[in-house]
Image (cartoon, rainbow, N blue to C red; front, side, top):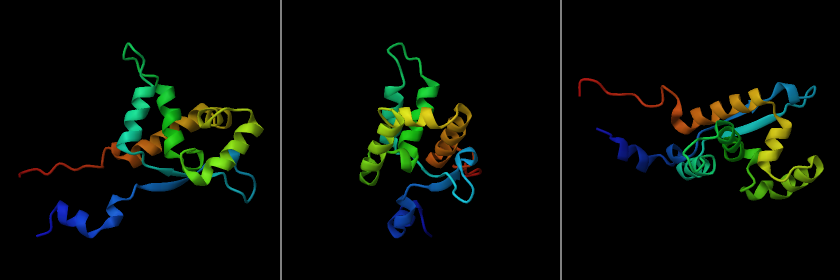
Length: 137
């Protein structure tokens, strides 16, 4: 009988972060789609987002959380990835923003940010059907 640990040992792909493509129709032009690669955030990234977006009184900046989820969870906006560094710096300069957070808020509408953040949280394991309780154990 195979258990959870046996599955982990035999399948490296189980340890890869889930991802999916997302198209922003409003920003697409003709045959060229404004396609973003969404991926799950790690536990360390999630903790970092919580720390940054929580003030001293414990109040959480919900919009800040959504924007920060996009900075880590949208591959194209993640300035921690070596492949993005030069391209993002050029984009920041051309659009007059200082960082990925500014770029996201300049390019995307609030509803688009909210929808994409929801997709990232689901990829990160926060969906209702991600874990199933085993009954009659």
